[in-house]
Length: 227
Image 1: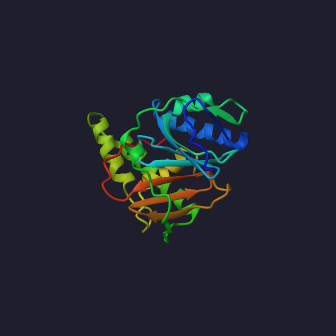
Image 2: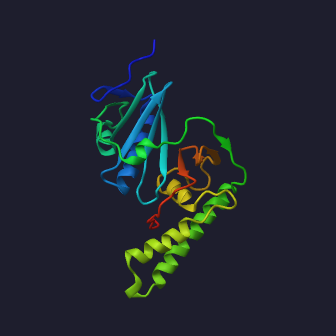
Image 3: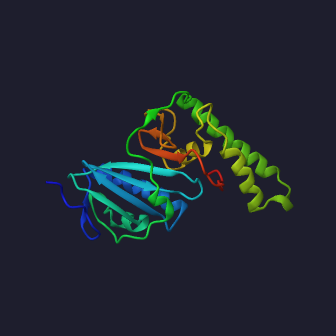
């Protein structure tokens, strides 16, 4: 018998304290970029998927966590309220009230049909491309005359740099920047496991710590300042 979906006020039970701590860290990073951040939660077959959209990067960030039971769930909630509900060192959280989801929450990547995309550079080269882009942004920003150092000019410069693609993959560099800023792209020496997948008009950069998904068409402008 399929269990009834969890609803606000019921307890979300994670598999262990490590899963809870990792989820709390992800929520904290989302809140850093947007204090009013929301997340869409989907659960099934013992796995929780948490989707967020840090506004500075215009990507979808995806974190998964193992659950203690085969609960089902599909709910959009405040990231801050969910973070507050995760007790330090605990494994449970009372689900906060549902919120009206922003448009992105209704347009998630497909669950299946992903195929691996070839051509993704080695992890060291990925980090190098990101470091080069960050250095270029900072150098060009510092060189701007005072009268041109406006948000509009910095946004234009950011769109130019972060819309460049990684090698021949078609993945914009802003996806890599988001992966690093959200803790998905760790320093050299950590487990690598980078892979790029495509499905239904989406690209997804997968790491051992989470994924970054971007739509391959109809993307709007971005406003990214290096962290």
